[in-house]
Image 1 (cartoon, rainbow, N blue to C red):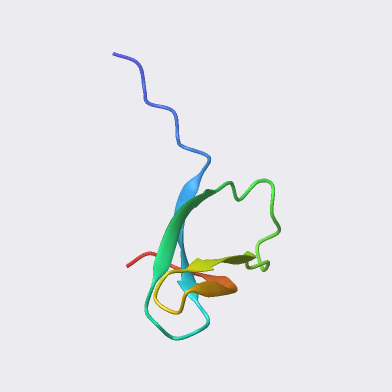
Image 2 (image 1 turned 45 degrees about the vertical axis):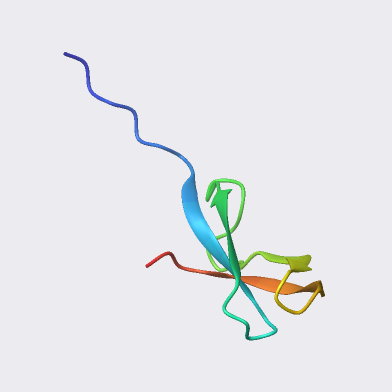
Length: 60
């Protein structure tokens, strides 16, 4: 049997800056981003009914 390939992407958690505890899960390819960069997106938070900043956090 052959060896399995290592996956290049990893899962990250995007946590709402509004403090609601709402989060999205997204794949990130570390080869395309420098080590120290954290992803930030403006996405919809349904708990406050508006678009807010979501920042990257590690999966638990």
